[in-house]
Picture 1 (cartoon, rainbow, N blue to C red):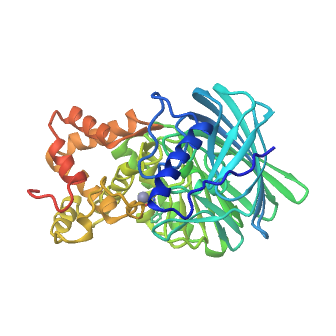
Picture 2: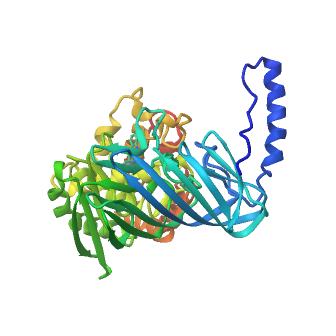
Picture 3: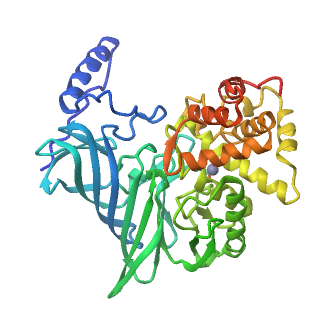
Length: 468
Ligand code: TRP
Ligand code: ZN
């Protein structure tokens, strides 16, 4: 049985009222939520209200029924997790949707909702591994970001596609919605047999029963919630494989909306892009690859794990960018959203490498041209890791100054050490989460040079770094 939703009681505040409400709020807070223990990882510094550091999800099993005409889904999520210490209550992130039964280790649990927090109170405290089952249903909301972009469960003319960066996964999946908690996923999606279903990983079953078909996708590589995707709609499916530099066969699953199928160029070049990036970044880190090209009216592509999403009409440079994310972003994932240059700076640098190999300017020339940008330009403000506004998450400093940081590193340590650093980074942190300080330490270890000033100039200094 759900608890009644407790009001936060912080409306209509005077200055004194604010102090009182904060005091009361913190008492009420500690009554329901035990404070985090010293062993818990810190919450994300950009989105501190996402995720719950007190437990670690091992796997999500999502059974989902979807009706494209109404955009309604009915789902059960089974979440296996490990509590870092004894918990009498824990949170999941879920925005919108109607919640039905919540069970913990098979017993009905009490729950309340506060904004996007689904607060679960099991009948018995959990410690160590525990399994939560959440039944939920409804028409998922799209989530609008502070920069005005749309994510979450995004409607298309014939279905929907789930795009989770940075926080949109909570619109369709009750989850520990923070990049530091990677897990394995199974998606069992039932939809009318007239549509197709793509997701991350490998398709392991497709079973037709009457006019419905159940598609089972399994993503066995650890994955952050923002990289999880499901796409339902009319798709042409292209199945092939390519060979990794290790000799392993990589299955390729590509799904393209037939009304706007611009996939031929991208599908043709994909094996070449994988080889190009393997030579520079090391072996492809994931179980499969491919793409989803759909008619979602969002202005971006997204590096959804193993199967990036592209709006139709996306070109080869975008493919190079999203594929580079499979190493940098997906396999090696930022620990904190403030480290996002570790994804976007690297993916942008991959575009520069590809461009140079295809008759465009070299990274050195691009760097020099960009370096001539006047000091007041937005390229230089705020520094890549120093933004405070989530609207700057996808800003020019993160992408372009982030890529320039890598070129500055290359010019300092030389090409041989530079590519050794890129490869070691992908290898040592494969399937993990990492921070900027760890990258700096690794670059110093490989090159034997002191790189503190270079990285603080390029990543932390507000304004244009001098002397480069
Ligand atoms: N991470 C995506 C990429 O660069 C871009 C992206 C995702 C984005 N969501 C966004 C950009 C919202 C701007 C706004 O591949
Ligand atoms: Zn990117």
